[in-house]
Image 1 (cartoon, one colour):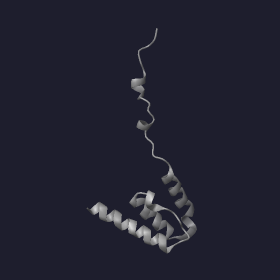
Image 2: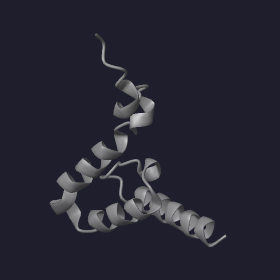
Image 3: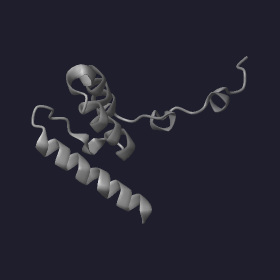
Image 4: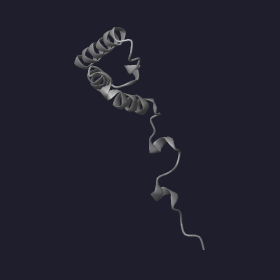
Length: 84
């Protein structure tokens, strides 16, 4: 319950901030709530942190990937019996 209330509060704060400042048009809905809150804090300082915000947004747009997604077996399973 507390997590959902906190997340909803962050989303409302992001929406209010986004509608109030039209110069910065970053979609913060793809970010985790704690990262979105930090981005909002950086945006309050003006253009000084624009490069950092752009880097955060670029990182958020990257697809998530794990070793399980690649379809390869772990190294200890790949090694078979030595061939003669």
